[in-house]
Image 1 (cartoon, rainbow, N blue to C red):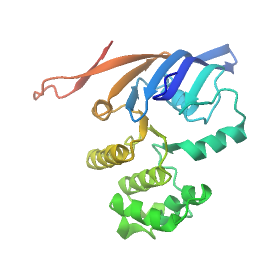
Image 2 (tube, helix red, strand yellow):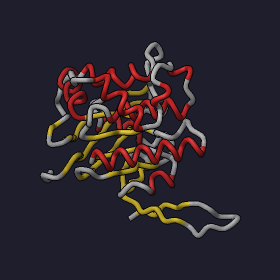
Image 3 (spheres, rainbow, N blue to C red):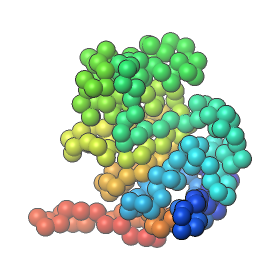
Image 4 (cartoon, helix red, strand yellow):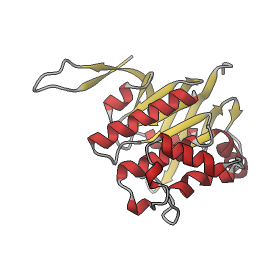
Amino acid sequence: MSDNSAITVNNLIKSVATQEGRLTILNGINLDVKLGESVAILGPSGSGKSTLLGLLAALDSPTSGEIYLDGSPLHGLDEEAKAALRKQKISFIFQSFMLVDTLNALENVMLPAELSGIEQAREKAEAMLERVGLSHRLTHFPNQLSGGEQQRVAIARAFICEPKVLFADEPTGNLDGANSDKVANMLFELNRESDTTLVLVTHDLHLAQRCERQFIMEAGRLSESTLVEQPATQENNSVSVEAS
């Protein structure tokens, strides 16, 4: 583990018990993500992408192996210690937004700041919502917001505590094309301004291509890859993946 590593993973294994026996979801994962780096993890459904993200974000525990986040070991921590580390260093953006239905937009963004004891939480939440273009929606509840607006609230909430590492699980997966582009632009812009390390899981090859590095998850194994943009034609306007 180097001094400029945000995340270091050594021989990570995750298996679960099934009626047929042990099922290995992650099999010997090794990964090093530098401070301030943006990383995308792609792969088919069921390949283990979201499982890996949950382990890196201290939302779950591995069967074996080591995880270091900003120099702190996650392996071996109890739930209380992991919760404290998440509050101090981590934010998470979910595909399904995960806003609190009974709180309005401002209150949703204020919530993690208040839990972390940040002073002037209301003022900072208002500034974050203005930053994502929602200053006119402060008192609206999630069911009064469009999908794109809800995800922008979730982005504001994720950045208010200035996390060391931001994890995003399919952050544009529930959005149409226009909203997907708008949310992605805000995510990367705020990430650059905050110098936050970004790790995202996505099926969107164009979104992944905006990250500095890309990895492919297949059958529980992770390999670094290169996204190669194909020449645009009427029949072909796509991005392919090449393993390296």
